[in-house]
Every structure is written in C-alpha cells, then in structure tokens.
Length: 207
Image (cartoon, rainbow, N blue to C red; front, side, top):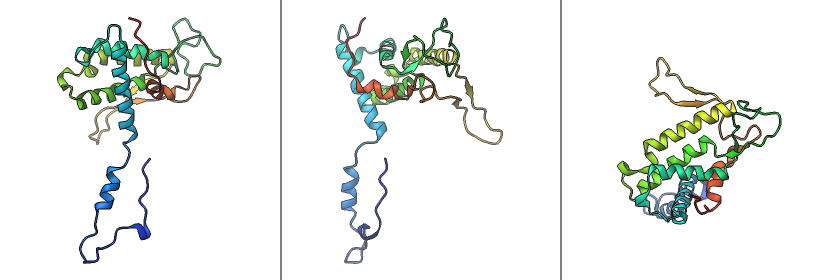
C-alpha cells in the first residue's frame, strides 16, 4: 500500500543559505521502504521453486531445469489449489455456479498459474539465468497453460473472449475474462490459490 506523503511542517523547506533543500533524509527514507507486493511474492515463489528442486527425487539443480520439470511443478501445486474444476461425468460440468457441492477435486486456477509463471520467468533471469534458456518461457509451458485455461473454461462454464481492436485505437488485442477464473465467486472461492502456493513448503516429489 502506498503511504501518502505528509504535508505541513514536515515538508522540506528551503535551506538556511537559500539553496535547495537537503534531500538526504528523504533519500534515506526511500531506501528503507519495503519491497512491493509483487517483488515479495516473486521472491517467495522463487524460493518455493528452489525448495521443490532440492526436495525432488533425485534432487535437481537449476541448470537441469526444463519446461517439462516446470509443468511437473505446476501439477504438483494442484494439491494446494482452491478452485473446483468439474470432471465431465459431474452433473455440474459446465456450470459456473453449481447449486450444490460435488466431489470434484480442487485445482490451481489458470489465472494463478499464469501469474506464477510470469513471476518465475522474471526471477529466473534476475538470478542470472539466460533469457534464451528460460524454462518458464518454454513452448511446452505455454501450451500447458493454454490447455489448463481451455479445460477449466469448459468445466466451469467460463467463456474467454478476445477483446476486439477498436477501429480508431492502437491498442493490441488482449484476453478478457468475462468471469474471473480465480475470483471469489461461486462454490470454490479460488482467489487464494496464488497465496497458498507460497504459504506451504513443497513436499517431496512423488515421481
């Protein structure tokens, strides 16, 4: 949350010599500001992934990380998901707001996974990884996320529509979700998926 700047007697005034005000105190305050919510979440996600690698059987190093391993990591995170995804045999398949509970499993919402991959992709390069070798940007990972998005859209009755380009505008096409995948509505309350990813330490891989 941004802290509003104070006004009044605390505002820096002109120096006694008539020159510009001393900004050393304000510069010191700026260096002590905590990291943003995005940066904090990115650090937690990165530490969670590194812990997953160390707990893997056999343990893996970052140099051996591939797109296939990233997909394995995303599937592992499903156990912490909060989004109900109905199977085809469920009577509520394709219904965004089922009238009653069902036994279908909880999964990570596509929106949470997509945001997670974005943060990990940035963290990989910030920690010395080469952009051309970034496993989080691998084609297999993009295809997996697309499959998750489409399957969850069908299972939960959530249409995805491409925002059409305005005739006089220069904005590029963007994805518009008519109903938020990981929003708090319906029976699943899936808004906490991303937070659950980092709040629990990963267990040993079953592979």
